[in-house]
Length: 322
Ligand code: HEM
Ligand SMILES: *[C@@H]1O[C@H](CO)[C@@H](O)[C@H](O)[C@H]1NC(C)=O
Ligand SMILES: *[C@@H]1O[C@H](CO)[C@@H](O)[C@H](O)[C@H]1NC(C)=O
Ligand SMILES: *[C@@H]1O[C@H](CO)[C@@H](O)[C@H](O)[C@H]1NC(C)=O
Ligand SMILES: *[C@@H]1O[C@H](CO)[C@@H](O)[C@H](O)[C@H]1NC(C)=O
Ligand SMILES: *[C@@H]1O[C@H](CO)[C@@H](O)[C@H](O)[C@H]1NC(C)=O
Image 1 (tube, rainbow, N blue to C red):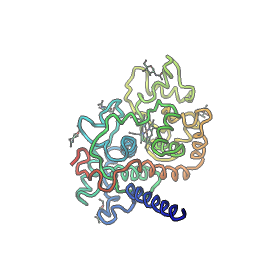
Image 2: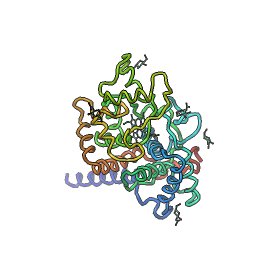
Image 3: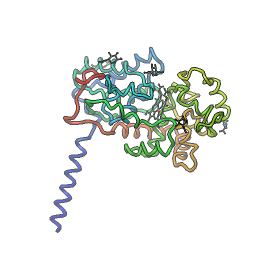
Image 4: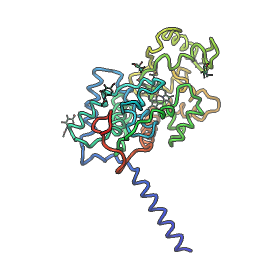
């Protein structure tokens, strides 16, 4: 009996290790094959920011949209009829040309080595840190997928979803409610189109004339001026009215003042009985706790179903398979 148990245990242990090593990413993955990968990414992003001061948030968002559709496999970047980028609703992601520039620079420095999925993960980290946010060691070694998943973009949460739905979606990919609050804190930089929140100003829950009751009344008035009814719904509004170009914890102070721009942001603080409200308060008190949790959550998000080993490929052009 003891022998049987021991052998079973050993077998299970070996199976677990094997399973893990298949999916294991490592921060030193390119140490020998492309030691300069981080500084190449950083230098292209710094250059890009000279032309577009909003490039950092755009880049971070791409990693999220990649990982939430079929895992972090750069499927988001693929062109073609099955393309995720052009699938309705228009989620207005941008920054693809800068990802191309990073790929071009890396193909020069270390040809055929660095995957587009890893470029997204690294570029997201560098963008957060250049924007004033935390640094973390990015696990690397992802490979690029061979197919796009246009239908999968339904898996990206909408700003109009309830907190319960968004939390369930995050949980389904291994992200808990602290991760959800930390990751939502990325809306401390960047912008949103009026279309993303206008219902909160004019017809909340489809009731004509109704303003979202969780929206600060003075902020609602300001937003009504910036996004007039019948005006240009593609106008861009700062996600963090205080400091939308820098990565800090002001977002959480905004939520406490009911000044979150998206419904999905404000829900974290204003949903009755939600455990996320305490996390918002904690991050509002302590930027360093927010930063630490953010780095951890980004690593978890970057670990969603990566392709490793002999799966997928290293794309030479991020927009098409080899
Ligand atoms: C919790 C669920 C989330 C929802 C419902 C959501 C929704 C949105 C929406 C509606 C916008 C505005 C898009 C536009 O109007 O152009 C936006 C912008 C943005 N999102 Fe999220 N998001 C979520 C989570 C995340 C996560 C996890 C990240 C990255 C880690 C992220 C990164 C960004 C960034 C950086 C922007 C600004 C983009 C720019 O300035 O171009 N979001 N998000
Ligand atoms: C690493 O990349 C940076 C930025 O592109 C460049 O300035 C530097 O010369 C590179 N170093 C090496 C050893 O290739
Ligand atoms: C992908 O589509 C973009 C935009 O339509 C285009 O500029 C680019 O050349 C295409 N790239 C490939 C490899 O098909
Ligand atoms: C999606 O929205 C962006 C930003 O408003 C715009 O530049 C782009 O043309 C739109 N794409 C489509 C296919 O409607
Ligand atoms: C509002 O009405 C539109 C059109 O009738 C419908 O598609 C949408 O689901 C409704 N939204 C809500 C939150 O009830
Ligand atoms: C509305 O915003 C102002 C300015 O931030 C703040 O002083 C006030 O407390 C907010 N009101 C509510 C109900 O949160």
